[in-house]
Length: 446
Image (cartoon, rainbow, N blue to C red; front, side, top):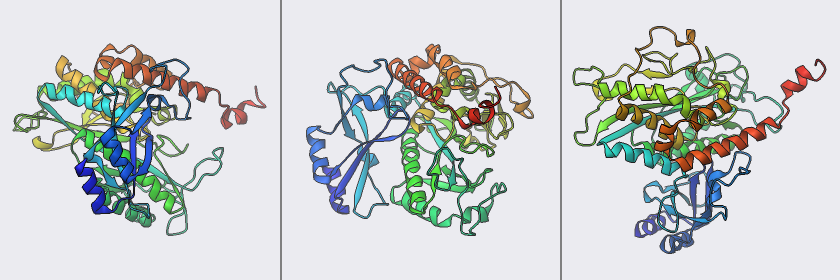
């Protein structure tokens, strides 16, 4: 507690946001005065109901009991490594990410941060240390007050909307310099280690790259970055969205995850030999991802909109082939030195919970390494000419995960039960909505 006390005093913080990521990556928690936050650490009085981890996008809950039926309290244990200032408030305010435990000191297994910790523990048992680097794509849009209307690009400094695709366009990014100046300043204030900013293929679609590092720390940063970007956009009168497919005629937004594995003992990258050849462990890692990622899709493509992105010739993968410097495959291996050998998982959407997307991807690779699963031969040419083997709808993805014993053992059976119940409830809510497409094409014709 002394560290928290000194940190808050030095920055004259008056208020603290203690936050956790729910199953969908939405920030939940409590806001309290700084002195009360310090007392809560000492007496463990900062608590939330366990049911926050089974809340759906719509704020509802599954009909079935997938947690303790009395909805017991869980204790929030603030992680001192995650405390940061919230730079968009006028009053000095801190935010801190919390881990969650029960009163018997056991971790809450259905917490998304704990799911990732669980996978990292599996790696550590074998003397392995995974390293990741996420890349997050997103769209900027005009404020959309009526959800019945399609999203459109915002007005930039030129006072015009983008109409043509401006991949890697410098001036196209500069249209929104005031937003990104705030983003970089606010990320620096929060020690969010973002790197490159570039324009993507869609109108007012951008990508931010994170520097590589510890998976838990990078998941924390991606979680906080989403909130930061949305706040910066709102300050300038526009929206920022991480929907996987927000616009009908534009490409989708992904969260590519670069992955490598190092030896805890030697610090060496285990994916390449000193002379640059791929190791067997590397190929087994890819083999595991090819084998299990289709069943892990509810963690990588977590809602009905996610599957609109995974279409042929849409800058998104449709299968789990792998290749070197090939952007049509699900698993891309960039040209690299032996020290930087890695594989880029291109399946996850920007809408995924970063803790769960990284956990699922690493779990599949871990299964490949421990089970010595053989990978396919690297893809030559376009993977779009081959069949789509990834699920095309949420129910198909859920069925694959339901029957994947290996993933349940890795990620935790209780967690998978909760995830499937939440996703089933969300899909049922979606199925009750009549879309404008149905009214337009069916109302007077069927």
